[in-house]
Length: 581
Ligand code: SF4
Image (cartoon, rainbow, N blue to C red; front, top):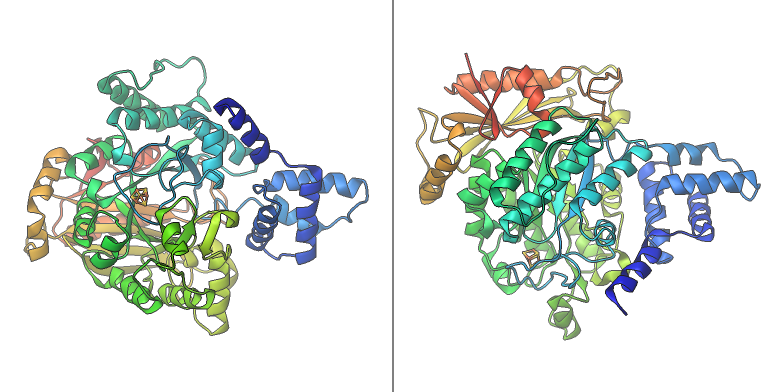
């Protein structure tokens, strides 16, 4: 079959839902009577997987429900209507997330568990929801972003603050021109959705020169600072051995604020066995460089890999927070699964690899949740791989909810940042709670991290937080550690690439939670725009002065530069910098 026909067939399979399929899902939801949107989404996902279709949007279910109630095939159910209309889950963290995928390309890695599909970027499966969308749109960054923003708007989400995540293999392995073009097109999509009148920035392709692409991107970024759909954060996925002072420089220029970095296991023997192609030390160097440039790091950890045990997984996870060289801001815990297109499938068939049972995995994950410190956010606990693609390994799709329920039964609770976000804890604190400022301090290689947060007195709910880094070598009363001395050359190089950060402390992240409050509007109930952000910045600046720093640098997303300008910061290079008085 020709490529074109094949695409066409996929399109029908992926995107069309028959009334019968929608009705089946609705009847299952009615039967299970979920109480929350999360529970509803779980039933929807599971039923869709059984029907071998992708999840229909709640908006489609709602319209089918309305037809069926009109024809009296199902009764009017106000609780169901309310759940289907409720549009606050995606934006519960205060931002709307938009994801796109890069085109298929080779990755320097040879990881045995990694799916390999020729039509997909390495590690992605065509049936994953975001991947399916990207494939359908021929991996066009413009269309992926545009259609996603439009869809979010249609479903009732505010889209003025966008956390943009670019997925697929190793970002830095792609040609530099492709990288700049991809991001240029993404910004153009957001800007075009709010642009009035003709655009003056010419349309460019990958064939244009690097300088032209970089200039055009700068122009689109400047436009984005004030437009309706602002990109307030940009996340890129890459490998530790791809992180150098130079790649960091380019990623900053592209507007990146957060890096997803695969470690998988802090154990060289396991890394060797699974053919990761890098060591733990290389990861440590990467995280030091990234933090020294103010980036946030989302570390990927994989339990149940070949060569480990549940107890060893727990110990390795503990190490992530004990070692000063690691201590990530966020973690994605992806229990290993066997996918047919991965090398690991052959190991599995030959009996060379056997995944844990559900019980063992559950025990290990529960322990991990209890180990996670307050400053770290478990951003994911499972990868979005359709059950039908998994040959062996975890198939529980609502792992996070199941774990929370299990911990609750034994009177325990995860204190990771995500679990304590105010949007998830509203029922557990008084409505008139006045947030208090807490400051947690922890050492990392090359600096001290301060996690400033506004929480209720019992630290059940977090209203907002700020990550401040005080670099060790800049503080007059502290000397560089042995470990830091090891990475001196790369750190000096980093200073040359990013001179704007000389003698600066870093605000690496500022986040005030609540349902997205549109820029310029105020909502009484939500914590965004209530001045908590300003107070956090003021507290951080005070701390910097106490530690002997006269300058603060913010790794600001393009869409929040204006916010920092109002607080006295100005753009120098790719950062927002303020001289403290
Ligand atoms: S580095 Fe990532 S994308 Fe590349 S092979 Fe390994 S898991 Fe797959």
